[in-house]
Length: 256
Image (tube, rainbow, N blue to C red; front, side, top):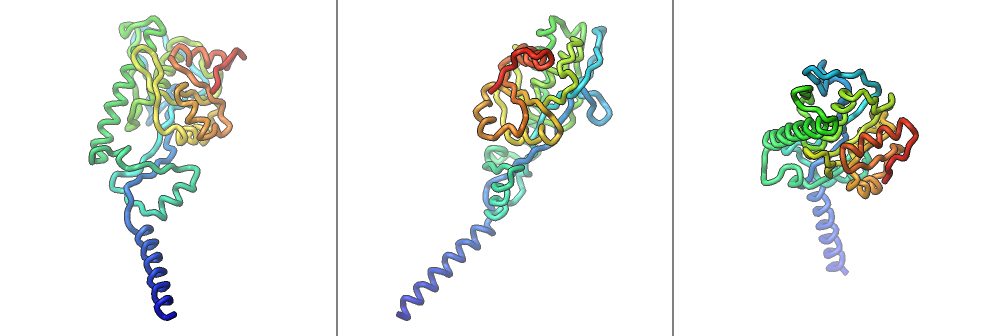
């Protein structure tokens, strides 16, 4: 009997020790959160997010076109099981492996620089795709962008839509607040992105009613839930423009 009690006490001690270690030893994960949005028809730090110079006419716009972003914990941020469990239960946060954000041991500064290079490429692609859609060249209009320290490729679609709205006079928003995300190539094809659930939350927080996304992300959107947003999937810049026009005229709008 005494031996059984000793074994039970040792077992209980080991279980408690394992729990203590699990809740105190850092684990290789980071927390992702909804971050800021940028209105590509508006301003950032006192300058137009999409600024157009040259002889082409720039039309007034209404509403907002919000590109959405996510915030990621710092590389040196330390989490233990307890804090991650709280984040898992918090619908405004997501938990991802640290290596998916900071691959190959890259520092936070290296990741930031890579993301800014991706943003520069997105801006170039958005310019080429938008001007080609409009049948214009950089001799008629030269877009420049003031996106601050926002990085990554997924702003491309909404930068392109901002250019089209300003140079076409089509009033793509119809006065609405429309948010979204999507990488874009120089031919105007819309590509997949990451962080969609957090971007949907950012859009809802900033009073958007419509969310434009790559069609390839519909499955992820279904799993995340639309939060009351009208989801509009697109595959090309031309398709996105047509969808926004249809919203204003009551025409057929694509859905997930």
